[in-house]
Image 1 (cartoon, rainbow, N blue to C red):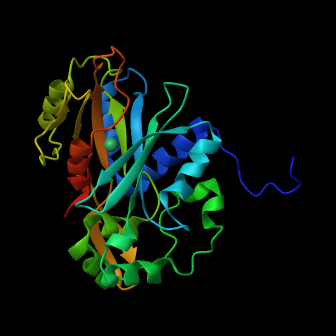
Image 2 (image 1 turned 45 degrees about the horizontal axis):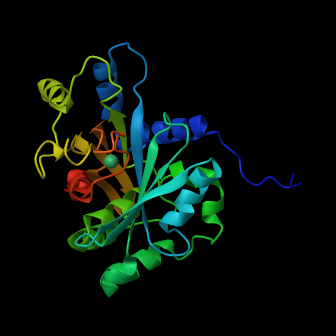
Image 3 (image 1 turned 180 degrees about the vertical axis):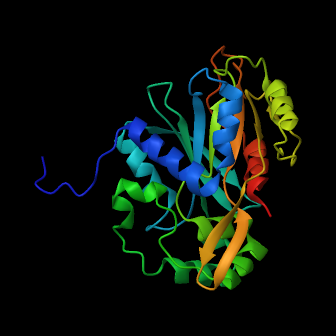
Length: 273
Ligand code: NI
């Protein structure tokens, strides 16, 4: 064992607990209310997956986020391209099937304008290259300062870039497994329940994205509006959202565990302004 243990090593459960605390405090406080209503004293729901966002590059790219999950036994199980949004993603699974899958995307900076790249480089320039070595960076928000003007400039080109620049690192969403949710037969029932309780759904691509035929149906709330401190004042902008997923067996009879690009493409829009 190394004499110097730089990292506070966390268990899978501890890591997700920290991510949940950060997500419900800083990005999506309404998730606590949704969870309470949906589970109605039947214990904590099973999470299908969480999603993390970042910028490409050797310092903060998706592999730098993924390495902490890989250390905990996760392995890469899927790869996804979102050409129009200039995003690239992996999903990771754990041999312990009850552990949430982890969907990590990154904005391909090389495909973005010079203006966008310049702003992102300015924000991340002073971050030390070892910054991601401590697992706790995953739930510590934004390690850089940002102005309202830079946020506005980024959002003109990429809502995703503006989101990462404003919020930094943390779970963009948690996703309840509807398969494991007592009292709800399908995703329609979950959606009806949420609307009945005055939560707004992301309608982009329809309230339900995907189908039984592709193995996965998903829906999500619209992101909470949260306040973010900038170098020149406060911004009130979209934070995190809550997602709901129902999985179906494919032709091989096995419950599909991947993601569907066309659906995920629309889910990204839950944080659009
Ligand atoms: Ni998701």
